[in-house]
Image 1 (cartoon, each protein chain N blue to C red):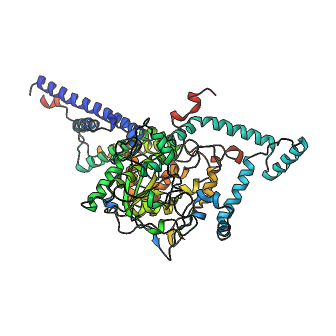
Image 2 (image 1 turned 90 degrees about the vertical axis):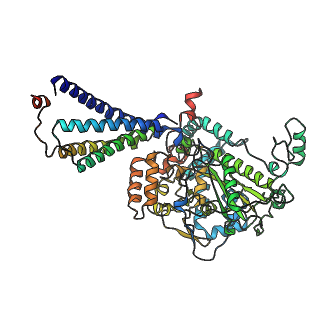
Image 3 (image 1 turned 135 degrees about the vertical axis):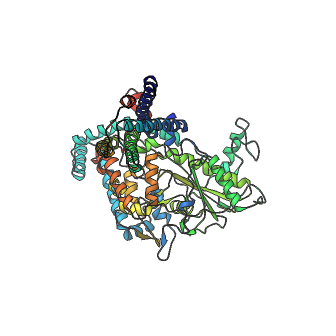
Length: 106
Length: 534
């Protein structure tokens, strides 16, 4: 079994994505972007789409199915980018002005 | 909070954000590596890594009471004299076959097609004593018949010979795979040539001489002898369910990837005895009473060469493995005191295997007439053991193949010989099913340069894909979908994303107007010119 299809790999993937999720929460807080449940759902959906795009292209490449990798990439990569941009704009909806921590303390 | 504390908190926050960003990058990269591994990993070559049954899926959720085929009229058994393609040479000049041709114009057409192919493949040679003028006249007549210029034919022949050189490793591999075959003596004389008990003889102890004297053959030995148990009285089996479990475990231990058990439907047994199988040839064959159950075993053909059919693939690998499994299983059952007989590839059958596979719950029969299994698609070469050991039987399964095949037709579109129907099912011997023109299929076996056979329909079938997340998800989607939407979408995706490397006519040898195309490139270990100076 390859490391990349093992249970340990998926544990490490989980750690990476938890870290990324926590960081995103702080990042959005710092930018004054409020997150509602539906925004998290939208974002999770986009992450799945992005993951599918990456995994589809690389799996097809691993199978030597170059046509599938190429055509899949041509279709899925722009879709991922466009939906990412749309979702980012939706996330930013209702953004509050940012009050820096330093000025808050002063 | 002091400035220092705020700064420290800020740093921690910044650190977490930076770690998160790194995590996102690492996670995404990891997904990329996962995908590549899922495409490349040998573990996704279902059945090739683990031969102990770990790849056989739990079929409970797909089990149904009745198989997908249905009897729509009076049923009949197949006639091997006309329908068993490998015996055709024996019967071609008989009245039985001529009568069959009259009632089957599609077979007659295929017979004529093959005669034309043979003529085009073989340029006449100059016979000893034949004058130049006579030979020139002969060539001219031949050129007119095959409508091809002699010089052009020579160029195409050279192209075919170059392709033949490319296939040196593939042929050697195929021949090696077919080199090992169990013998009848293993079943009727002893517990195997390496056996210590039960009549086995160790090499170098006079065994060779004894075997030469008493080597039995299927042709000369009746089923009463070949199928007979190795004990006077059968051992009493505690429970049919337990016996079934034991038999399946043994089949996996013997090397089978898939195994299923069913009661033998006599409709699948040939109507007449075949030459060389111990039955009286050409006489209506009574199904032996001890052929009560059928155990179906099967192994896949090597995956990468299979995708490079028709040239680089072979059937010999899986044929040999399945044959060995069936003989081992037969020997095992006989040792328990029960009757058993192997029906094995390539031609040692007394029955049709695909419907027995369906009955045994291994899969559904597809448009191309091959049984499609959930684990291996149609990349499976089966063998059957008929026996009377009491066992619990499996139920047939339905996982959406009939519905998928109705609209897919990829195999029919790519088949170089045009043998696979694009039409609906027809009634064959009383059963509603897809019927292929097996004569045309068989013709193409001799019209390509590869190891005998074709197998492009196996490679092109959307079900014959690796067992990774991508294809198993598609399999589950089609199995669950009763609306047919996923079938249409996936068929279109299959055609767009996994197209054939050539048109159907490209798969023929150059002399017959083709390009010696393979469905996919051969694996590195079959690329002759990378290893051998030519």
